[in-house]
Amino acid sequence: MTSLINKDGLPVSNNPKAIHEELFRGTGSVMGAGASIFVQNESITEKFIMISKDNGLEASTVQQFVAGRYKEALALFQEWLKA
Image (cartoon, rainbow, N blue to C red; front, side):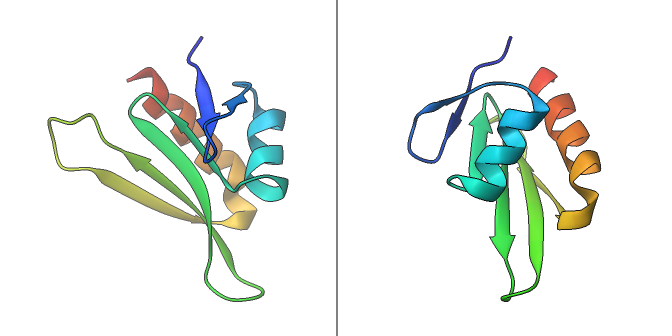
């Protein structure tokens, strides 16, 4: 199982509920080996889920999702963690 940490370096369980809690009620950021997911506040009412992938060999990749598409963003984050 891939180990994940939050912005403060504390461990986060690799399950959808724990990641959701950390993003929306915790530090707003979860990082794993080669991928990260975080919340970006555009305005008071507008939030985006940002996912970034960086393996150190190629240019980094960033995907942006509106907060309502969290499930899609989480699925892509989990896929990038496995890569």
